[in-house]
Image (tube, rainbow, N blue to C red; front, side, top):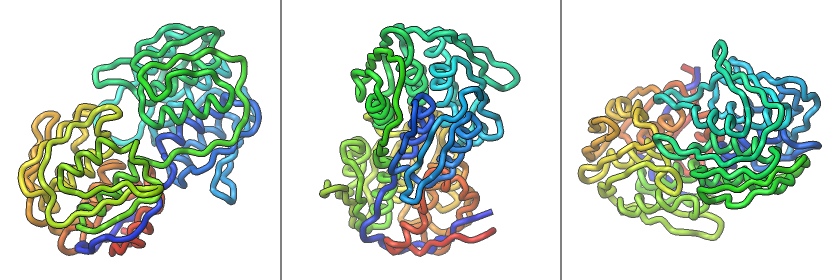
Length: 421
């Protein structure tokens, strides 16, 4: 099993290019099930999760191939398959986003209950609620969601849940609504950039959608969607991770392709910590002299601080000059990385959905275990600033969401390489 070996203490400097968004690419690839004709999706990152989605599409009768230029071409060859199997869906939560397209186009779906990162309960009740409102009949049988719908019909749907809106749930309901008869109004829809990107893709393919980028989507059903070429937005989580890497090492990193309009809340918190974050032509730059200042962080649905950057922010705050508090409002159990950061010398105490962080002057290298995708990134950031060697095990999590992470960090001067355990 691969691991990352990091020799800390290097101030990162230079430019790094951000890849396309994983969280936008997965539902857009799933949505190509809806399209008649070939789709060519550009700026798709080369990741394990993307490869898994391509395998899911192939099991559903869709030809999916990566081209020499890095784009992915898809074309529906057979509309009879309806099952997304456990062996694939159990490894990646994003696979659930094929359910809405299958119901809209093929009127039946059999999709395994999803897996993915292990950081607490992440229910799919809002997916089911929204698709049922459109007229689908859905049951859970032997670990599978089994759904059918003779015809989906537009309606008014409220997608609010205990922890806010649902990104993948919105994607599923949106894909169901674009081919439904009549008008669908989705209230409290997720307004994350990744949902807006999906809506832009669907509109380019012939859908009629208003309000994307807001918490209310209005969809006029159409009879068919066409195959198109489309380019995925940059990955805001990867961009934020690299900006934080520059800050935590006391360096100066310019992230080419970073969109400041997607990172306002994170940038605001970084500036509270004393990080100088500057908008650059086509990107953003972060630099920090000295230790960061402490702050309070609360994760919220977009445009708030994303839960997918909580762990990386915690790594920065672990060396802040004072006490910080991080409150997790999206996934209250998403703190598995706390114990591993403590192994590196951090002082973090968890109390319910809160983490109280007493900043230390320095971290020290140690062997740690990655528990999920974003926790892996946080451990890498901590290792970059820790004294001595840090070994991050189970880096297959990183490969699910970061394209050639160690290579990009090496170009910034990091002493990091991949090794076999």
